[in-house]
Length: 434
Image 1 (cartoon, one colour):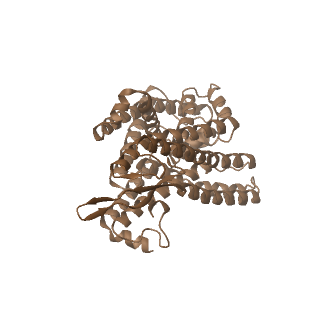
Image 2 (cartoon, helix red, strand yellow):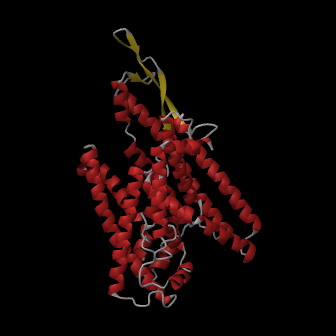
């Protein structure tokens, strides 16, 4: 309780948290406002028989797709556009130049990302509109009046909803607490937990479609997964750094020993989100061809828990872990800053040699962290599929929920420590802020 009391004493932090909760509440409310021209009950009945990748996509948007709400696209077009732009910074000189221009370049890249979001939203919006119209063949009356007017109205509504969700995420990042985009996905997943628990209870105790011991094993495994996620997320590789003594007048500066904390999982949950967004792309394309066999082919080959899906998904997580780490962590800049202030790694020459050493350590440390992310994302889905349990809250969801929660707590912890409070946790601080 002391942590909450400290939060309430800091007016700025209190306003940030309230502001964040209000915007997340707006997002959740908007997820229940349906697109005009759709029979909600008929759509829910048709969607329950679809499953596959559509079910995974629906999980990431907080059930907005199955309700055909104005936020059915969620934040996924923005994430896809961000992936494309960040990858282009490594191969296209123009984007690489923008990255080095500081704040002006960052604003220009943000503007380009927004335009990319609108373009991808247009493509995915068309796909979703055709997907919903195609459900009329499964359950008549999903769209009572299909046609060009319905398509244009749906696409325009979905694009507007995506732009608004993107705006909410940016406002949370600027004026709230935590990463707005991650928190929006977090809110969508957490909002579906009660429904997932109710569905699991019904399957076990009412319909008796699932063995009770299987449910117990699944829950124990998930609690153990959460513990391992916290452990690996907070794990660090410490590189010792010594600062040489400098005499200025009568005072002596430096002469201290410290360390560079390199986290085992530097990229956090971003690789998982990026990989999941990439895996959803085939289903977005398949939406354009409802009931043509293409959608069935995509669901059969890329169904969550399937062999091909798991292999591709795990490889993408590892690749994106390295890519995002390389984008956000620059060993050369770190080496230059250390050299500027008289710091050096014992046994390493300042400058290029230090940068190469940090890069080598970073590559070696990132590998087990990336493999761990891939295993945690894939193994629960395999178990759920093998045991025949209808439970969408798997490893990917656990990684995102735990990772985002830890990152948000770190930011709150930082605010408290800056104002000389003990921190959010009463019996110890989050490891990264000690």
